[in-house]
Image 1 (cartoon, helix red, strand yellow):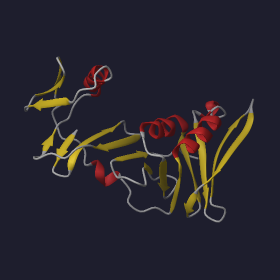
Image 2 (cartoon, one colour):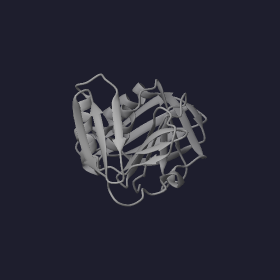
Image 3 (cartoon, one colour):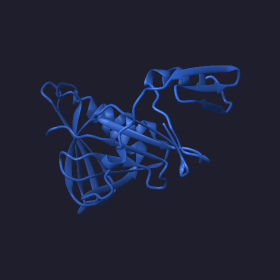
Length: 206
């Protein structure tokens, strides 16, 4: 979690994907490295409350206060990696479409992707302004779902369908932008109408 002059920024990664969420602005820079398990406790408290969350910290711990409830987390020693170097800024292939539509076609295709550890192939075609999500199962056959998009560039990438769905469901906007370069470079998902949330996923070997 980072508090910077440009805004309060939350960042998390599990080596296969990375998410960044920007919230309200802060007056001073604060860098906190907090265990994910502690945030799970905070989220359980927040889910039952509608009040503001107050965060107080020192060099060793952070306190989250929601109403009359307080959650204390011991900070992790060390420095969070400079993850911004991992976020691509230019793309050979980019597409914008309705987020709910992408969720629907990925959900359908993921049923055929269980044999391949959930991997699905995303193909974007600029000429037809279309996207395809494809998966193959020996017992069920092949599923190829398609939708109309705003596409720039043509190419394919293989992703874990669960990671893709979780990233899409974490977003709130009506549309989603998906951009990628080579088959081994990170894929970016974001809201084309705001820059407050960014999610990247490492592709699978196709």
